[in-house]
Length: 521
Image (cartoon, rainbow, N blue to C red; front, side):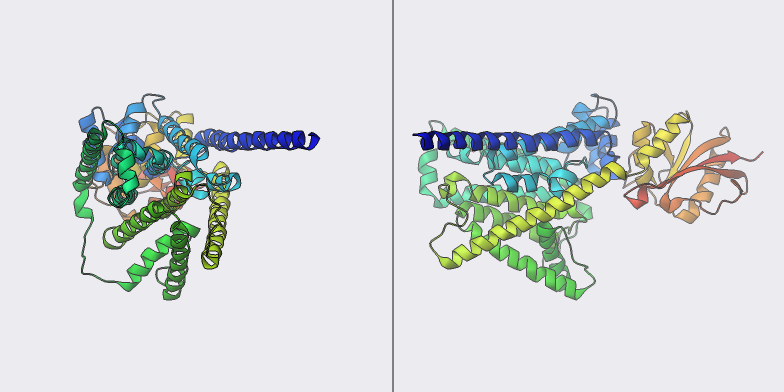
């Protein structure tokens, strides 16, 4: 009897410990993110989203301003709705913090992974840094993917949650279409080949109406997303007959990057080949594990394949934020595979075949290693952000405000880099690329200005504005005038005097130089 009481007490203690950890880790995540709101310095891609919404007075303005970005409007629309919260870019950062925190709360509530693997994922590179501190639309793909996984079992009664997720995912980013397609393919194939799913679903009184409404919602939202992406259809060229082995290996390198956050040097055939082989092996191990659940396997294969084809034929992507979609598909597939409704809560290593047991054990190591790599990168990058500003724009803008120069006329270039300063100042700057005042980068209207053309543009500005004798000059690193001697330099009809420079920035292109430009009389 005493032993039984001891065991019951131990069980209760373990449950309380698990409950505490299930609360503690998300709380730490949310708290650190809140602190990061006030430390993180936005860079140009983040500020672009804020400025597009801030300078839109109507929904029509928002549509027009957002169209050239090449992204659907959902992220800009959310910023537009909350921009008055603080009237500064902090509003957008609060939105990002809320969405990313919600994603992690959902992950901890519904994901079946053990606590220690959840912790590794939570503080990993994508959820803790790229889709958390960086305020961009990628967080929406993460949140909607997790919502689908959390509501996955509801497909027995209704397809509405899945339909909404599909439709909204296509309105976040072109790459998110791969996840939306994976959800769609999974549900369709299950409906066709699973009599159990059809029988269970048809027990609902209004199953036909649910199917119709779900289809219409998904179709409407997907069509709207397609229309928004068509605004920049000239930026993509598709040639289905083209074959390029190097490019093919580069796409495999993106899959490798999704697992291990490293992409091979595309100029080096050996790097490309080795990473492609390792990436292919990791796919093989993952697929063999996911075979325990047909729907998770369908989700993984359809998601990876569609994203792979998009990367190969349409757009490869630039940085980790893009190949992170492979990681999202990977995590979502594992989530579904381990769902109790898919495997009756079997152990990750439980199987009747020794070969499959070994492969599943290998997958367990792969999953742990992948999460550990992401964890190390996430911790490192987040800590670094508290000590090294991501951009020097915030510091430059604060310096201008501190000296009371925010109401001065400001000449700035390159526009795509100094637009971040515009956002922090809350005012339009004169961009020679636009031959006028502006804030966010207008890609279709701008004419690039080379560094050796800056002085000519300054002289032309003085000539066109005879009433202006002096203005503030903000130049990004690539346009800076670094050969000024004796604190000032004279040119044909004006002189330039350096004031300060701001070099502490993780993004080297967003380091700035500040000058006074004054007309000679």
